[in-house]
Amino acid sequence: MTSLAPDDVQAQAADVALAGAEVAFTPGGWLRRQRRACGWAVPEMARQLREVAKVVGDPLPEHDALVSMIRRWERGAGVSERYRLHYCRAFGLPAEKYGIGGPTPDYERADPPAEPVRSGELLPVPAVPPGRFAIAPPAAVAYGGIQEPGQCGSWITREVLMAAHDSSEHAERVEHREIGDVTLEQLRTDVIRLSREFMSGELLSLLLEMRRLRERMHAALDRRLWPRDEAELYLLLGCLTDLTSAVALDLGYRQAAEDLIRAGWAYATVIDHKPLMARLRLQLASICFWDNQPLRAMDLAADGLHYLNDGPTAAELHLHYARSASCLGDRESAQRAIAEAADARERDHDDEVTKMGGEFALSLASQSYFAGFALAELDDALDEAARELDEAARLYALGPESGEQHGFGVRAMTDVGRATVRLRAGGLDGAAAVLKPVLSLPRGQRIAAVTTQLGRVRSELAAPIYRGSAQARELDERIEEFCRQTVVTDLHALPAGL
Image (cartoon, rainbow, N blue to C red):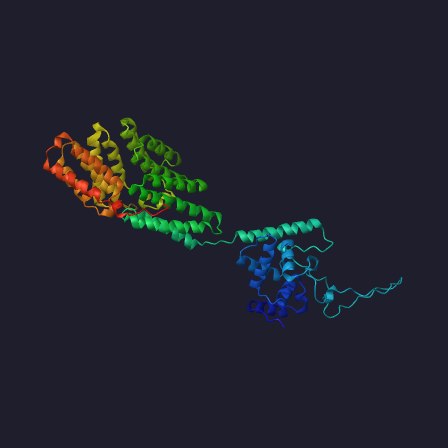
């Protein structure tokens, strides 16, 4: 006698409780009896179905979903023609034998021929023998409570039922989800944390952690996901790619940074996420500016404003436009863009990207720095530039306001800008004083933008007014030593596959 698997014990008890023999000959009972005769537990039945389906090239649902479907069928749910054929192959039966086998229940046996009725006689009321039903036995119930058609049933009914069964099975596969809300929340938390650590952290360790997080997201996208899960992952992946690009730019790898932005743009396009698109345009404009492409940087900043025209990100796009315009000598456009940046920030706006904070949210101090940077490029706006840069330094000294984070990079650039303006005005002592915190930065924070701007300070120190000055020469030597020991000198080989 075949022993029952543990997961069949409860089903057997239910058979006995429901009047034993009659349940065994329902479609569900037939499936259960054939499976037990083979000595298979429900998981093994699922494996057998998968094996026979594989032979004919029919991909079946995931294991857990198929196990759930088998248990539902054995409780009496309708089985589509597709799975009936797989069952027959697994049991080694011809297709026409599906559901046939074993003694016929009493209610299905043919009644003996009735005695001929003579005219004028009353017809007797037949007694209901033991084990028989006074009314017709219930028909097998399929999907949605619709009766399974018999051999003489309408082919239209059969097709409708098969369509309903197939849709039910497909819906069961679709609702299967291989990622949970907890995992998605953890990935979002990691992106937010990295965005904020970028403001003050060590770039090399952040780069490695960003790569590990990116690999986790790539693996998650290969799983079975709901559409909203995919949209969330693409958003997080786009933000993470933007952060990684910012690290690459700080390390001086401009081409790698631009390639990363292109990848992020693909993710943003898939989900049509306008704030993310604006952020990526902003980052690409910055890359082009530091790569001596101010015209392209202006075009990118203007394009970014088509996706987002309110809030901190829009303000930063205006300021990047102003910075490039001032480098090209377009004073009017630069000053107009600075004023529009202030207006954009004042307008109420909130989006998923800005709410992550850190690198994704422009602080008031950074806004003053960018305005001062743009004005410093105009020869007749040095006083305005000095006021903006000094205001940025004051706000940095006070610390970030609620919801803000201050980045070491922009803060250092503020002091470099202040030193440059002072040198142009003949203030060597003042320039040396404001550069002290910059020249004390640890090697891990000596980013490419700071060293590039310090090169401009050295150009000012070479002006005729400072020739023969021991103080100017000493400051120049300190800057040269600083630039020899940057973050990139610690990087023997940039990890492959940024």
